[in-house]
Amino acid sequence: MDILAVLSGFAVGAIVGMTGVGGGSLMTPLLIGIFKLNPAVAIGTDLWFAAVTKTGGAVAHARHGHVDRRITLLLLLGSVPAALATIALMHLTGITKGWAHALTYSLGVALLLTAVVVANKPAWQRLGLKLEGWLPESRKPALTVLCGLVLGVLVTLSSIGAGALGATLILLLYPRLPAHRLVGTDIAHAVPLTLVAGIGHATLGHVEWGLLGALLIGSLPGIWLGAQLTKQMPERVVRGLLCISLVTAGIKVIA
Image (cartoon, rainbow, N blue to C red):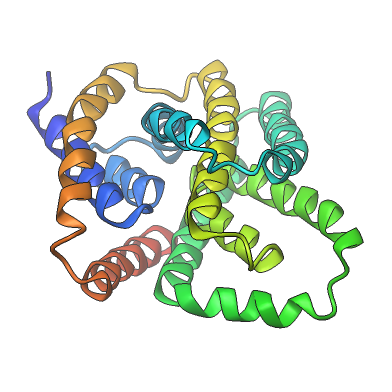
């Protein structure tokens, strides 16, 4: 058992528990920078990490009625086929230098986008309310499927986007959705998407199973502790530290 992996899982779990985001966006750069995994294996391992850690949250939210099943289904109609198509393309072409560059670049862009989302969280709801005036309800289902498609490709290529970016897209289309249903719906969509993408990466040999187990052992108590610390730390401080970490990691990956 790698104690460093357990401690890393604990640290990322604590951040997820405090902020609700940051799992994939911190874990993948950590796997690349600290554990020296190549980007493809880091992404595949993180997808499984996300699928397992978020399953408990998805079940809990569903039991409390916090999941909008219609929005979740529409997102999955776009994201799952997109994830399968991306994996199929990887199988057909092989992991060439072009794919390696695309994976690395997608990871960097996703990290920077997540930082923007986290930094301006309150602004997205205001923007969604402004868009509501000229966005007919009849167009929302198609746009939701399209958002799912974008997330499916991004998550499969980078392992990032199912959390903060997914919640932001839902918020833009459905700004009046209560916060607890927004979180529940986002997590309910993230679990099957990350699982499908994770299975796809596993078929390509992109998962470090032993390391994954150690990370999961550390993450469970970390998530619990982070949830307790949420009551003690100002949200602005936590969000600011997370943004700095994301921007630093994103610039390092792209550079």
